[in-house]
Length: 166
Image: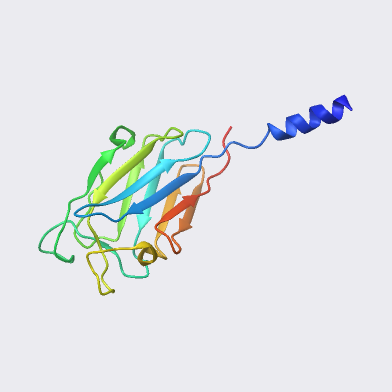
């Protein structure tokens, strides 16, 4: 009986550690936000996180200047949280549909967030992007050892499951 109890306890406490990444888009006025959070139980080492809007249901773009592809209000790309985890600030041009953040690391529970204006190029409300308009866009994480990605579905939030860590 004692061996059985020991085996059950060992099984309960031997679940693999995960380093999942949550990505959330928050519609705002005048700035929209993307929030990237390490929601796992271990740290994420150096990685490149790419948000690809090119396959979004509504043709979503980054609107960073007043005289480009976007509609009405524009906002430049700005890191507002976790800048210390970012290797360098990416260049985002007006009308871009892709941004890659190169991270030094992202400890568990920590967040990197940025603001930017995001516009819909196919819908009737170009300056307002709602949940399903991001449907089809992807978030990808690449390290020297592995790559993982997830597609936005009906909500503007997703969780990218990453390989286990020790």
